[in-house]
Length: 259
Image (tube, rainbow, N blue to C red; front, side):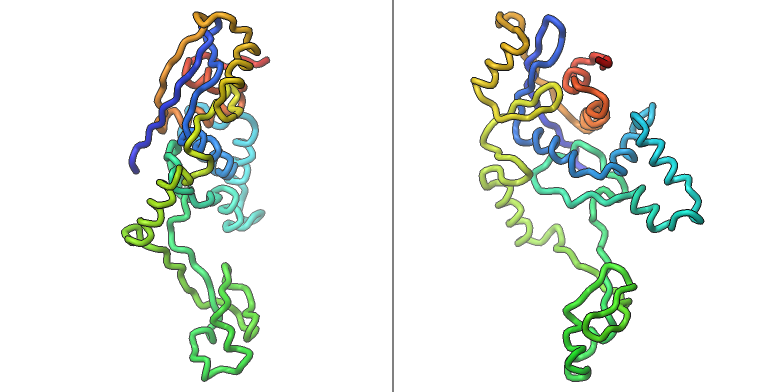
C-alpha cells in the first residue's frame, strides 16, 4: 500500500508550548472525519496491535473478554462480527493514514444466496416462481418470497475491476471535480483546534481564538509545518481517546496531564 503523507501548519503559543490551532486542508480534515466511520472493535484491534501499552481505558478488557469467551457461550460467527467488524467502504480521495486490519476494507467478494428455481428458465416454472431471480439473501437461511424455498444457492457479487477504464475515469472525475471526493469542500482551508474541533478558516475566527488564549503579541507565536504519515495517524488516533490537547501531545511531544 502506498504511503500517504499530509502536511499541517501549526500555530504554536511559545509561552507554554501548546498548539493554538492547525491550518489544515481537505485531506487532513477528511482523515479526521473518516475516523468516526471506523468501528470500535476495529479501533481496539488496531491500537492493541500497534502499541506497546495496549488499549487505553476499559474497552480493551471488553474486547479481550469476548475473545476469550468459549464458543459454548457465544457462536463463533457472532464473536467474529464483534472482534472483526467491517468498516464501510472508503470514499475516494481520503489519505490512508491508518493501516488496514484484515477486515478493514470490504475487498473480498461478497457472497449472496438465491433459491434453486432462480436459475431455471421462466418457461419451466410456475408464474409465482418467475420472480425468484429477483431475490438474493445475505445468509443461506432465508426463504424465497417467490417459491418459499430455502435460498441456499451460492452466488457472488462481482465488483468492477480496478483496471476498468470507465470506473477509473468516473473516480478521477469525482476526485478532480472541485474536491468533491471524501467529505468536506476542498476549495477552503480549515482550522483544527488542539482538541480536534474543526471550523472553516476565517480571519475573525483566528482573532477570536488569539483573544481567547490571551495572545497580545505576535512574538508569542511560532509557525511550524509538520507532516503526517501512518505512524502519526496511529498516534493521533490513540492520543485522541484520553487527551484534550491532541495536536500538542502528538506534534510537540508534551505528555498529556489530567485536568
